[in-house]
Image 1 (tube, rainbow, N blue to C red):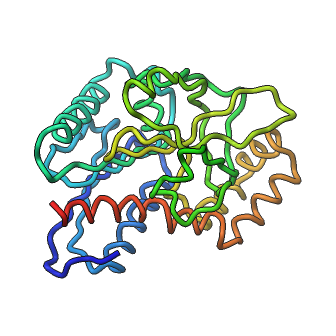
Image 2: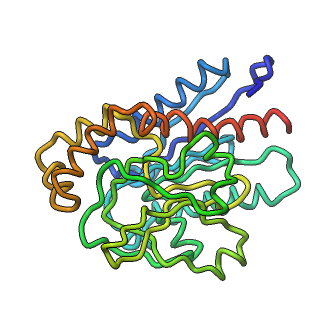
Amino acid sequence: MTIQTDKQPVKVAILDLYNGIDNEGMRGFREILERYKVKNNLNLSYQLFDVRKKVEVPGTDFDIYISSGGPGSPIDSEGTEWEKKYFNLIDKLEDHNLSATSQKKHGFFVCHSFQLMCRKYKLGDINMRKSASFGVLPVNQTHIGKHEPVFEGLADPFYAVDSRLWQVIHPNEKRFMDLGMQLLAIEKERPYIDLPRAMMAIRFSDYFFSTQFHPEADASGVKSMLLRDEKKQEVVSEHGLDKYNEMLERLEDPDKITHTQNTMIPNFLDQAVLSLQDA
């Protein structure tokens, strides 16, 4: 990526949907942005907004919006004050991107945000899983996903951190077609279990990208969580002890979680920053 040297400011809004719950996500986003800023010698700044707990929502004066995961039901928040403000912002950003302006607004939506956006667009069924999914799991690219620039440099399947009790399944193909959206990745096939595979990554538009997994997660943060007794029990009851031990091994592999964290969001930022400079 060639960055121009005029140090054009790049403003990023991080939308915190964790509702005050202790998490690794915010640290992951901040560290990725800090590394990206230094690596590309950018005049990049970011600001955090506590969307759910404090009902803080940014205006449309940022260039890039990163919307986090979070706890709880992506359905029960319908009609709440924070969600109305959140979707009002999304509508404004979409209107801006549909206008003639050359400077578009880019958005990346993770996990809980992915589920909220799928509900907004009616892209599939949202329901609670039989048990929580947590761990380092393979994600399969779809045929379209193999041509997605944000996935450039990733293997198929690639490995990602999954942490969710809810899921979006049964893609509504007509809605995808009508809205021009693309399903880019799905949950790993488990032939021995007769359950639908969750949608794992969607491109909503040229400027909005989303994942149901956590591309911001780093190996050390996930390892500390996996070593907690309650998380270990969760993973062992869902996947078995062998899989749990395999997940811990995967965290040591630089081609898995570390590679995903160093690749996906930086690829997205490359697209966003280059489009800002071209405008």
